[in-house]
Length: 448
Ligand code: NDP
Ligand code: 2IT
Image (cartoon, rainbow, N blue to C red; front, side, top):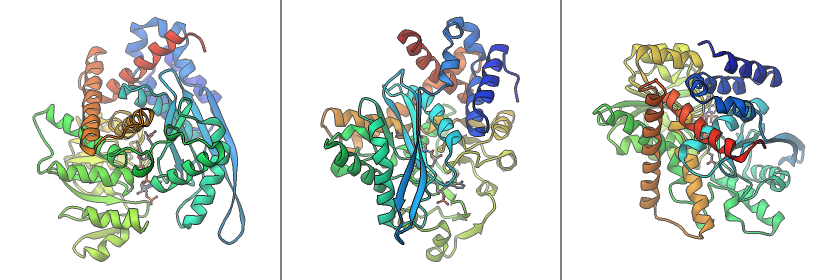
């Protein structure tokens, strides 16, 4: 690991000491601190006001019991979380993740990342994240509904359109947001549309929110390519995961002339040299909620590989869109060897630190998640804007707004990287640009 400057090193040591066992949170903090050396050197005022120390401590952390009854009549207990990390720029904003691996360290890493991501969008949203160790896989619709109702029965008292606005993440999509919104409405007796984003189109949702994260990632990569006089035309692309982000990243790649030849889930990956059939993939994942392995039942010339790494498939552009630390040093070495030129994180922190270092050493362009996947939360902010004005915009208008936002983030990353002596380094640029805007707001608001 690179050596941190003395003051940043002290802050990192304090984070390790105060948050034992939260490896993902440590990793997310470390990645930001690694970029901030030139910023604190130029701006001693941030140190004087302990801005970074304050940023590393969530404003509020809520942990609660979620009791519910399964279809067989058994009482089940899960743990719910909402970490309200920073509200200097606006109400806490960030998704809810339902996955068995969820614990405080994962919610804090996601909430911490969200602060800088939301800042980069240029929209008035603070950072937060939540979720539960509930596993929706294999659960009936009724079980998912009862779980969501139980989860919201505690969460409702902590959220609100001006306070904290949750949305989806892994395991939380349109179905779950519906059940959560229904229960919020029932308890509060208020049709407060702006309290959740990712809603259905007939009850306050925004066009393009479903597509936004994946589309946004690809808009970002399009700008990276353009900056080098290149385009998606004819590019071989590998996407990991086969959920919300992966599916719509693949859709936009295809629209822009590239071919997505592989995608995955936590059991294995599928390779289709003719290009992944997106209607089939949507049917498998969105309608049937089935495994990616079933893809080859309908497309017999595709192949399914159980286990293994999707990053073994040679590509020009790699889009990790599944989960944290899914692309390690070995995978990075394989991608480099196979001539991959661009890696952009559709997921949050999918590349391990050694993978990121390998990309830098090999000259592979790397876009960090807090920049490349910011289109989802940015479109959530557009949804809030529509809800506040009781308006609803067309698909085309909303998509143009999303594309403009992603182009803006791309340019801001490059400008900040240049200004702080790291030309072309999207990782440093994203961390610095995201940080400065929040830090300045925190200075303005005083010690709170
Ligand atoms: P989904 O639940 O729709 O899909 C997740 C996909 O990732 C599934 O294919 C899932 O496979 C796979 N996956 C999840 N956990 C693991 C794991 N431990 N190992 C291997 N594969 C795994 O989630 P999203 O598409 O919404 O989220 C994907 C990533 O994008 C996450 O990192 C999320 O934080 C990030 N993100 C999401 C945004 C959004 O708007 N939804 C916005 C910005 C970032 P399986 O079915 O086998 O579990
Ligand atoms: O990680 C993320 O940015 C999200 N899961 C989306 C958050 C949001 O509020 O739309």
